[in-house]
Length: 340
Image (tube, rainbow, N blue to C red; front, side, top):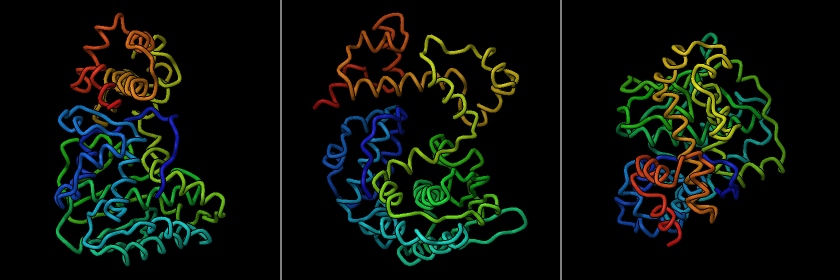
């Protein structure tokens, strides 16, 4: 896995997922502070439950942990997914004819590499299922999510489209916060189930998957960044509204009533659907402001005054209060941590 040098995406990732990624390394006695610093993440952020890191920082953490542990699966399986495994897997499916063949190959490869999972694909009527059998005790959500992301990201690239997931059913407990998982995969994630599976449209299995070496090189060069961002669920209302908000300055953001007209929905429908996705309209606006602020604080030398103006705060003190509420640290402190 390599890392994409890009600053185009302003999304951020919860500090909880940073902790999850480092958990096995921590249990092995590795120096987490050093690993985080190598990834451009200040260890002090782990003490702030509301903190966020940029997608590029999290991608760098994935690469750093893979290098330090010689394991591209965060050390979560009894057998390491050694460095270069995903590169070999993605290259080996270049010339499969369709998604059915590619998925069978991918699952066979992972079944050989990993000891704790054994997966198979089958279809029933209009749906296809990837069934994940636990060969060891049930794991935490982060383990299943990483496993699914490795598969889903690869098949999306192979078919040159975002393959929609209808349902994810898992045996594990629901994590404290699963919003990031819903944004990445789908809204319908069920926990404490009797088996693990991913459900999607069976018609996808007939899609052509032929790629060439150049497109493969571009894909692997951008991994794992693209696995985190490129293949997110685009049809959640959450993501549709985010896309609209990103197209305008905060001063031009619509009121909920005007947004409802633009989306041809009632305000009540928008509120209900966003609630089902674990958010609401004001929260989405706050999150985009927060993520933009983090981007500006870490990648520019813009003054706090200028950043507060870009985000349409009345004054710097209002920006200061809002940022501290969002992340539990002040904007000045956040910038200083990144500069250390």
